[in-house]
Length: 376
Image 1 (tube, rainbow, N blue to C red):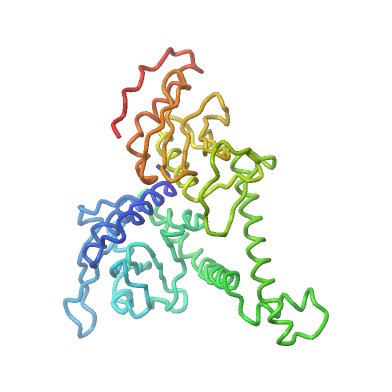
Image 2: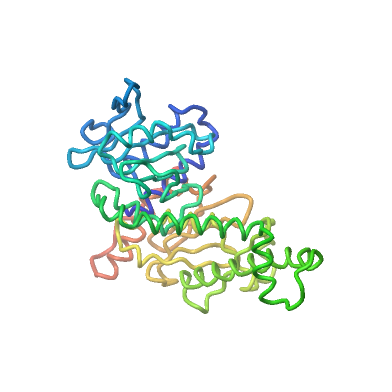
């Protein structure tokens, strides 16, 4: 499984159980240890790889502990300090990381609450941890452009030199992206003035400012939607695909008996999440690139080779009761009721056997034995 699928699987777990976690220790057990083991690939029960309650005396401070140290090649490379998941991360939380960073060989320090991971190094001064992270990974809203850099810290692909060399660029790109996101959400006066003076020739008065603040916000939202639409169109079948992404509050879908207008197709994040889960499951049988999504008004389809005759699953999410559509050897669909997208994993065997049947037929290997009914 690729790092993107591993991160998404953990993100789903966090979303499902976050409300049940109330302490730092519970945060470690439920979310941080799975991050170290599942996402980064280290054996949390092997003390030569992961050292819990790591101790390194710092000056007059003796016996202080940091939550985890990750070793690679016999040397401590990464330090991790954990706070409970309900605590927003602040630099004040990193005091022990600052002290330990200076007296160990570690070049990477991580401050986390189990959902957000802030990665630090020593760009500003050697052996002194920076005050600002060079990478921020938020599992509630994963920026997939960061995952290749995260992969360089995994056990199987550890490349510290590459991470450090890219850290400077990542640090400033990350900060710029967060500033842009804030401006798109609630533009400051300087941002409104900057854009307004490029389209309006008069003086930038208070009246003009009041007029353009909502226009700038609206233009920003429309621009982002258009960019997302373009990416989804490519993912769902090229420039002729019909996709609409809305920033408004979701509404109850119209009854299926109403006429369907392809311009009204709305692809939700939940549907994309379900698609990624199906793809992760069947990747054991076929290359991920062959698993294609195709959205419609009534359901979100997952196909093999973008072929309507090779349906793998249908996600019936545009209704109050959600269903996963699975197919038997005769391509007869059965809708399985599910509560959330994680329930798709309960039908993993059937999804894999569906793909295996198509592959066997293509190779003239004969039929695959029929799938037994999967309990709900």
